[in-house]
Length: 478
Image (cartoon, rainbow, N blue to C red; front, side, top):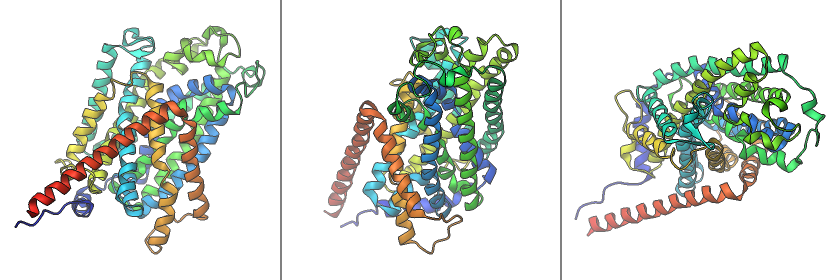
């Protein structure tokens, strides 16, 4: 009678350890910081300010501040864990160590769903901005067949940049990261210097909070704000390819703080720069901005219609940035999707073939899978706001476990090396957990049920696969 082959997460983790050793540790602290910056500054800044202002009015500024403050606790929890356990695909692997296989699969699958859809969302964002001068790419706010084809070409480009190794992608991303820092910064500086209408903040109908506090919180998950902050996780997901654990910790914190400041200033400048007559909207009707001429390219249209020569000239640069910024985020998330699949394989939830690396020391089949799924997700989500809200819900769902994981490792591995050890960890962990629950709650039922249905479909897949494995073991024993 033949012995059944070894299977399960233990064997997967043994193989993963060998694969982890082959990963190229080439990323410095600044490379990690620019991975965070590059992932966070993408389509979120191009569209989030418009969506937030249309939902909450001038109080959208508070939405960005509240979201940034709350999510920093999640980021802090993961920086301690990431420094302690620097592993590629880390966020989907940590629950395996702290909560076991079932929780690990649920979190990994939800994270997988969100990561898979980010690259196509960034491609959609780039094409949407292109439609400002190529209107045939969009129709009634949705991609046309031609627009879908252009978005697909961008997704393939994201794949190719990752395929040739983390060193190539990391250095390219650091160079592009400087561009992604400079252009948004110049945007809010120019708007605040040349195009401010102070009456927009409190002098219009409804004042500073025209739609009430509920709108301030609703804007966080549904208009791209929480989505824009999700990129801090890239430092954790690429931690297995960092030179040192401390580079993961400080690179993540540095990138997050820089981007949070930029986002708040962008929203502040956007609110003040709205020219109601140019937008063809009655003053104070913030909700109407979402269907105005600003919808295809918010900052571009504000500058192009300002009547100020400097701003009109800079608007052309924004059109270029509208391709570069989302693309920079897109190619990072193609890599994130691959490392998420790699992490799930390491946990025993996917076939061990997904642990194989290509000649450039990048996960082979996970990269190909990320490409195929990225192309497929262009079809059901042909608009940016729809896909970003889905991504926010599924991603933040996985962050619910951040605080408990932090405290579990404090108890089960108290003497492990931690490049950063958080003070008042129990409070930070509690706030991180509450934050994740609140953002999921604010997502509204529409997006929550859709995300939950897909997460549960993954659970069904897991049960079916486990039954097949059990049947195979029985047959081998017989």
